[in-house]
Amino acid sequence: MDDLPRAPAPPRPGFSPRNWGGWLVVGIYWFLGHLPRPVGRALVAPLGPLLYRLMSSRRRIAERNIALCLPELNADERERMVKACFGSLARMLPEMAWCWAGPAQDMASICRISEPAKQHVQAALAEDRGVLVVTAHVTCLEVGARALGELFPGHGVYRPLNNEVIEWYQNRGRAWYASSMISKRDIRSLVRVLRAGGFAWYAADQDFGPQQSVFAPFFGVEAATLLATHRLPRLTGCRVLAMLPRYLPDEGIYEIDVSPVFEDFPSDDPVADLARVNAVLEAQVRKAPEQYWWIHRRFKTRPGGQPDIYGDDARES
Image 1: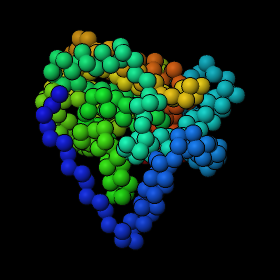
Image 2 (image 1 turned 180 degrees about the horizontal axis):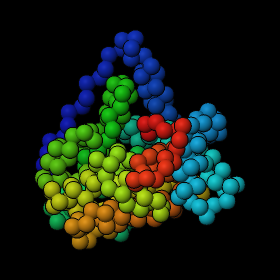
Image 3 (image 1 turned 90 degrees about the horizontal axis):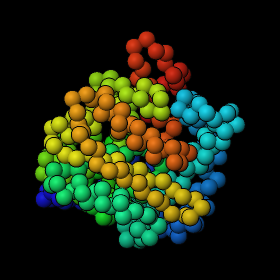
Image 4 (image 1 turned 90 degrees about the vertical axis):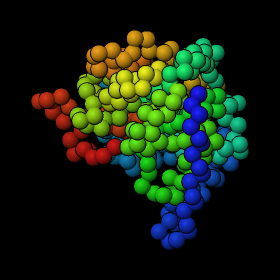
């Protein structure tokens, strides 16, 4: 593991009127985080159908993504999948709140990481070359980060929030299971962590435009896929593996999948490398597709000449 110092706790924002909205949200997260887990799940259950009705633009994006990626589903099955997706999004709120509540929630008791999955991480760390864990935006991603982080403390790459109060509470909570949080804009720090033999994870499945990406298939659709997953191992010599959590409703627990280390990675072909990564993430998403963030405009950047997929719903995701 790296010997970089743990980041200091972020300063708490003030209580000026401009922060009142953020503090209200933080109060809700704190409340949810200290509830018994079955109560938290029951409390947000009605929120799923409400979000489905109110978030019409996001609903249409999800419908288009699911029609593209899961063409084997008929119209009724697609509608049920979209509704289940919004139910998973609602459940994400207490899931994040539990993770950020620190020792008030014993998350390890409801998370299952198999011995082979642990061995994949241990084998990668044993090489002392740095480890990059790639993942995808599933609704219980925070649960997976906490479960893995409690076993293998590391550094998370994240998108900074616009609200300083929520940003503070989020990163304060993540300090229980992350050595530091690295802004997605701060690639130098991520490179430094990996070169020092550190452990870092980030979600590699968003579309940040053609300048940072190449096209590689994801669910059979050409998707702008971040080149960082190919470039970081070339820059740092780190090992790469994939992690994805999913909620098992019949058991009421979370299972965290970890792939073996990608062998012969990176190669000289970034498209082939990223297609391999996308294929592993896709296989894991297919185990619980209703828990994927279908509301993202995953395919907003199209190869030359191909029509826009989202039309009037084109906006930042």
